[in-house]
Image (cartoon, rainbow, N blue to C red):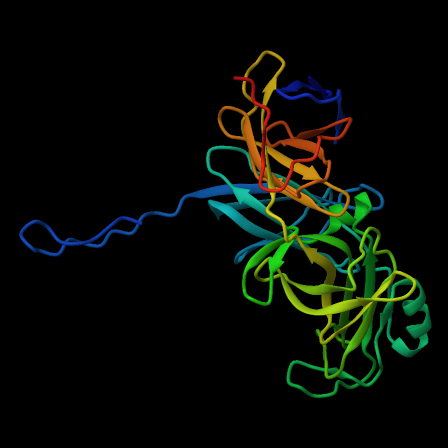
Length: 366
């Protein structure tokens, strides 16, 4: 079936609907026992570039701070950035910061010898205020966030002088916007230290600063109420905070189901928090091949599958255009691809059938 874009046509070998365009050296001893010299394997380098846009307007954002490891650049007036001499990696974290917007990050692969391009969108805080008492009822009603006064502390453990500036945001992950803005991957480190996949029912941002812009923490709990936990039925669901330095969600606490279907839980510190349920069943595996219209394999395409409350990403197709990606079992999903070199994406106009737990759906024609 064909995937139509403005510049190329891609085919995927699968029963799918028509697609529409969218935008180290070793060391040891010799045979005689003489030690050999230790030789370090050089680290391969690559270039990572992309564009950062405002999620509401779609316009490029200037002066966004983009970081990979210890390397940082800022976007130009059109939102474009370019990082050179970036270490090649199968998985690394790119973070994005801009005043007035809450922080975001993406998990990507950095490859050598091929373009590495990433488009990211940032969203503004829903509200910012220097007196949380004035906003307590507003935040609780609209965003489900309650921040008691008088619990703020600076990096030295002291109560700050002046007002605390609180910035808050809420995103419903059952919406396309919420899935696009979800930081990192849809998985996290549970209480046992194991990385587990999960589905998410929403995330909230609670950032606190003093009047000089220095980050604040708290000596008491804040309360989060997730108003839109669509599809959630468990009596309790874990809460996870996002560690931007590590690029990973970490389980800490839980929220309980209220009589009206909302979920409420306490958090011990500010940051980005999600209401996310670990997937207890084994994931399914989806395999397919993507080609151009002339049958040429579509290599180095970024692949993304998207369910109602989750996203799974396979960082690229291989040299034969083959993708192999784990998916949440028992749920249909959409399929999107992105071309690094020509910088365009496309998606199927339809849903891929669900894959059963522990099963493999191999759609490559033999």
